[in-house]
Image (cartoon, rainbow, N blue to C red; front, top):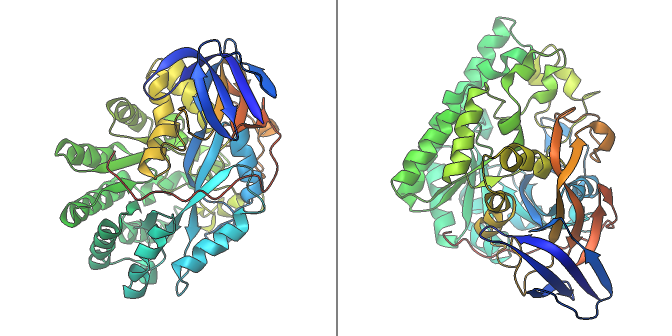
Amino acid sequence: MTTLIKNGTIITATDMYKADVLVKNGQIAEIGREISKIASEIIDAADKWVLPGAIDAHTHLDAMCDGMTTVDDFETATAAAAAGGTTTVIDFAQHTPGATLAQTIEDWKGKAGPRAVIDYGFHVALSELNDNVLAQIPITVDGGVTSLKVSLDGVGEQRLSDASLLEFLQRCAVAGALPCVHAENGEVIDLLTRRLSAEGRTSAKFITSARPPETEAEATARIIAYADLAKVPVYFTNVSSAHALEKIKAARDRGQAVYAETCPHYLVLSSDRYDEAEGVKYYCTPPLRPAWHQDVLWKGLVSGDIHVVASDHTAFNYAGQKELGREDFTQAPRGFPAAQERLALLYHAAVHSGKIPVQRFVELVATAPARLFGLYPRKGTLAVGSDADMVIFDPKADQTLSKSIALSRADFTPFEGIKVRGAPWLVLLRGRVIAREGRVMGRPGGGEFIPRHKFAVV
C-alpha cells in the first residue's frame, strides 16, 4: 500500500518546509515538492503541519502502584495516546523481587502484544539491586531494552544503598545502557510524612510539605556525583523543581552527560490544586510545585537543559481509588492520566504562547526521546527510510480538554477545562491512519515491540 501526503508543511527538530511525503510499505519512501506518483491513498494536508509521530518515554500501563492497579491497560492507554498524536510509548516494566529481568520483559510483552494500538518499548523499573540482578543487565540490553530505572524514594527494604547505586551506574556504563532515575530522598520523605501524620496534617494540602523540593535536589545531586564517578550518562525522570534543575544545569555546564525529563503537569499545574476539595486527585510524585517553579522549568526547556517532555501516564479513578486519600493523602495512589493531552498542552503552552519554536517542540516530544532511547532514525524524525509515523497537526484547531473527550478509563482528567489552540488532525503509524480528530481507528494488537539500540551520547 502506498500513501501520498500532499501540500503539508514538514516540521522536524531542525527544519520547516513545504513538501509532499510518499509512504511505501510502512516507511517514508520519498519527500519532495509536487510528488505526482500513483498512490492507494492521497491525504491533503493543506494548511496543516506534518510532524514525526510523538514518542512518550514515560508511562505506567497495567501497573501496580501503591497497592492498586492502574485503570488503563495497553489498549486504553495507547488508544488515548494515539488520539493525542503519540505513536510509540516506552513503558516501565515493573521488576518484582526475585524475578529475572527477562521474565519481567516477557510479562510486559504479554500485556502489550495483544492490546497495544501503537508501537512500544520498555524500560525495566528495578525493585532491587544485587549481584544477580546487576549481572542480567548486559543480556537485557542486548535484547533491545536499553534503559533501566531506579527510584530513590524507597525506605526500609525498598531503600537502595549508595554503594548499590554506584554499582548499578557502573554496570550500565559497561553494558551501554542509559540509567534512569526518579530522584527524591525517600528516608527524609518518610520522616517528614510521619511527623505530619503525628500532627494530624494529612490532607492533600500537606503533600508538598512531605515531599519538598529539597528532597528532589539532594537525590539529584547525589546521583550526578555517582554518575560522574562511574563515567556514565544519566537520565532524570519527571523533574519538577527549580532546585533539581539547578543541580542538572550545573552538571551540564561542567560538561557532564546529564539528561532531564519533565511532564506537562509540572509546566501548567501548580501546588494550589492541593487546596481544592478533591485536591488529592492531583497527587503525583514528585508533587506539583508552587507556580514560580514553572518559570524555571520553562527556562530549562528553552536552554536545552531539559530534553524531553513525557506524560508519566499513571491512570487511576478518583472514585474508589484516589478518594481514599481525602483525609490521609498517603492512602491515595500517586499519578493521573496525561498521554492524550500531552502534545496539545505542550504545543499551546510552548509554541502558541511564543516560548519556543515549533522545531524545538518536535525535538522535545519526538526526536530527543528517539535519540536518547535508541529509536532514532527509525522513529522521531521524517526522513527517507524512517517509519512512516506521522502527526498531521492543525495549529489552528481549538479544543477544551475534558473527561468528555478523554479516552483514558480514569474518571477524571487533571487538565479539565483548559482551553488549548492546536490539535492532531490525523495520526499515522507506519503509514496507516490510526486516529482522526480524536477518534481512534487503529486496532488493539496493531502496535509492535521495537527493540532499541544501545545508548550513544546525543
